[in-house]
Image (cartoon, rainbow, N blue to C red; front, side):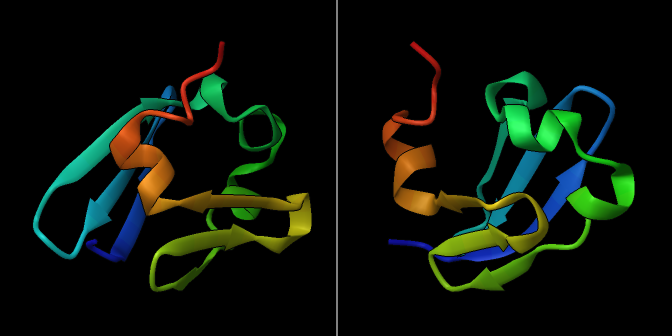
Length: 74
C-alpha cells in the first residue's frame, strides 16, 4: 500500500500525491469539513504514512479509502 507524500488543494478539488507516483484527485465537496474550512486550515495537515490528519477540523483521510473508493459520498 502506498503512503501519502503531499496534499494539494485548488478551488474545487483535493489532490493526494502518493509514494507510488499516483495522484488521486477528489472534489472538495466530498469532504464537507475541509470544504467549509479556511485555506489556512486546509493546508495545516499532518501526513503520517497511510493517513492525512487535519486536527483543527477533526478529519482523517486514509490512502486505503481513496484507493478503494470508500470516500465517495453515498
